[in-house]
Amino acid sequence: MSDLELLYPSPSHDEVSEDVRRFTASALRGFLDDLRPYVDGTADDVSPAHGQLFLAALKELGRLYQTHRPPRTPDGETFTAEEVARRLELVVAETEARVRAEVVAELEASSRVSVEQGRDRVVAALEALPRKQL
Image: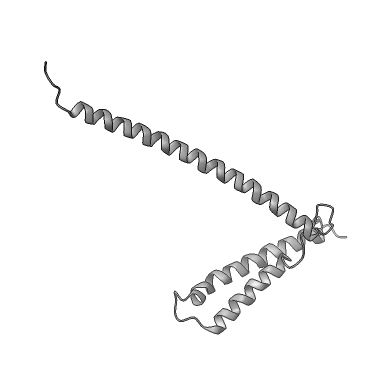
């Protein structure tokens, strides 16, 4: 080895793969963004060729992140369909509880405002009535 050679740490296969995946995904997203007006009809009439290109790029983006494969556990094992369904039910239940709590809090807050506004209106109307003099 000569003195002119620089020593770079050799990246692992996983690091290189992730870099290539990010670069390719970015390029595919840009392509999809550029193609979208020709597919949704905002630029011109929708062309079947543009639609096919759009779907092919979308499919390639899915392959890039291996979305067709079943999810894996942190240990690298594949989730069973039952495990996926169970986890999905938990997420749905947690989301439903959170949204329900937010809606209840929002309704209670708007009810308090409505009651206060109603009381203020009644007081203002009563004050506006002429008083009888004895």
